[in-house]
Length: 204
Ligand SMILES: C[S@@+](CC[C@H](N)C(=O)[O-])C[C@H]1O[C@@H](n2cnc3c(N)ncnc32)[C@H](O)[C@@H]1O
Image (cartoon, rainbow, N blue to C red; front, side):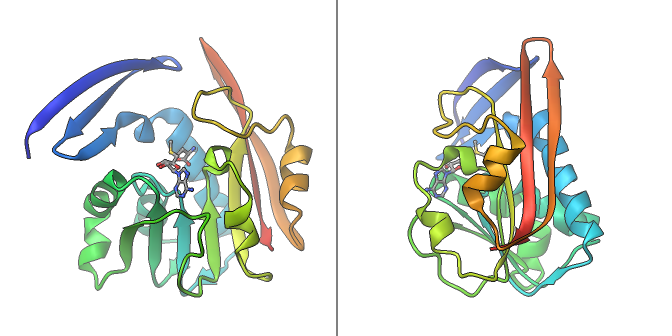
């Protein structure tokens, strides 16, 4: 792989290096405190429910960190995780990060897809921790009723966020699940940035 381009941007309290390697856009922000702590929170709450999954779909799965954490913690029983992202550079990165489970009979695989289109396969669990990046509810409307979902959104102003939620109630009301088994908020306070992430787990 050839290093083509490196740029440094400042986000929250951290200096982030975004490195373009070959055609892959690796973004160190995927490993930032705000991202990892949110996904550990997701793992902890999902594990507490003692659910299991034959096929989990992760929408807008980016670098595949949610899958990596769920699979490496080993507390949530899941036979297969498929991660979908519209950005084709994510596929190679997510597969590399989750190589242990790609190797393990494709227990993990990343794909390039627009989640606003129908995503093939009968997932019994859909995870989307990037709902603030979706400019339509099509992805949610396409999920069959009765499917288990884990959703995260936030109130962070950001040029790539097309939806903002000003409270946990507005987040819960937007998705209007048939049954909510968990809802909660997590505060992030950095010297130059404060935001709240919201999470709901339930049945659509
Ligand atoms: C910055 S990342 C993820 C941030 C998020 N807080 C998280 O959970 O990691 C947002 C991702 O959403 C993806 N995305 C946006 N719209 C999408 C769509 N319609 N279908 C699939 N992926 C999408 C982007 O390509 C990007 O990788």
